[in-house]
Length: 597
Ligand code: ATP
Ligand code: MG
Image: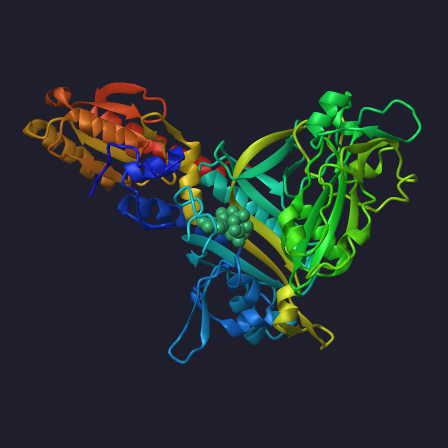
């Protein structure tokens, strides 16, 4: 059932998505929902086997949890609202008894609840359970085929421990297993520090397949010792250009509302300016908190860091953050604020009488702004800035925090001689020390050695199985098609009978096919009544690592052995070809298993 397409599908933007559609691996059913066709299913099964082998080797146990989950469990952890209301990503429904259910986007609630019921004593711990299963997420922006879909296959694992040290040791085990899994799948990945969100404190690491089309920005030090998702990355910014000495003074800056225009007209460097951002945070408890953020003019705000800092400082959770606009000001019944000329000392009185907002700014200064001795900033008056300002003149420094985006060119914290470089990445896996958040919320406890009940320590570990398959294509293709790594290729060898009307070719093709199969090699026979050129094009497109062409030389028992990756071709006796393949394929598989990390 090999049905390939000639044309590039219109809605596929990136190479891997196009190639999987063209090669007949997947069919789009509707937005973000795909059918895995037979070739794709074979790839997914091979990835699954590698995952299972590596999980078994670490003593993990496979389970299968229900996809339909009762809302009650999600209400206990406080996640039902966030996952179903507004931009929530959980598909949810009501059954005939009007009971609410959600289609599993993830399984912490279900597994923790079960663990709490069956793991009663420290003697039963640690336990590490995993499953490989379809997940559902009503993503806001499904795209790039299997990369961000609404129904996808995930491996998710959850571990339960008596103490934090034991959790950490399993976390390291999983780190090791994940690196082996990705290596065995033929992927080049980078492990990066990742944001652990509102849970706070706990370590978390993502595994990124580096690719231009990746949705994540990652930063890697030149010596490769530090790597992090930009959401989480820390660095030393480049030094600010010191401002010449002078007394604080008001300067006329008509129509200079952007950092660029202010710099080009006044001759400032953007690192000499404190820019001020006005935002409003919408909180889980219904409050709307205006924020006034000061940051150096050449730096950008990292919203994830801001959200984490906010939660740490206030103990409140943010649902969304928006910039404050003139429209919002008027709907709050507030006077216009001189945008483009705001200074860090903008008075709280601007918020007096706001309809639904709190009437005091929460103020933060990023370290880049906080450490400037003298700077330029808005004067809170249309067309005016202040030169040679200091925090003292402004009446003091707001709370100083790290909320800037680290970026390429910054120096590294571990060694300031090292610089950060930017790369794009596709997140294929994520491991996480959860701590006791879920076990506490669901009252999942065990009896410790002193006979006291306490909540489990937990970790969770995910791999995007279907995303990984597509990421492999993104990393391994050329202009003619896919070049599957042999360990996850749908077939290891394709035998192409050039002319299916020549009985000698057909017979030799079938003989080679049977012998390869007998040698345990996963082989596909292409004896379709198509022109040889069509069959070669298809073979290139679907990317099977080795091709045996049975053509004109079949009379003398000779075939052409072609390697897909570099197209090297060799005319040889068919028996030697089979021998060579058996050896090469076995070696490639052994290597992927035994290679040191
Ligand atoms: P992302 O930031 O890409 O949305 P996530 O942090 O939501 O990912 P997890 O909840 O950690 O992802 O899920 C585990 C893995 O499942 C991810 O590392 C990723 O490989 C995969 N994954 C997540 N969402 C999707 C999706 N919509 N389509 C395909 N794979 C996905
Ligand atoms: Mg997500």
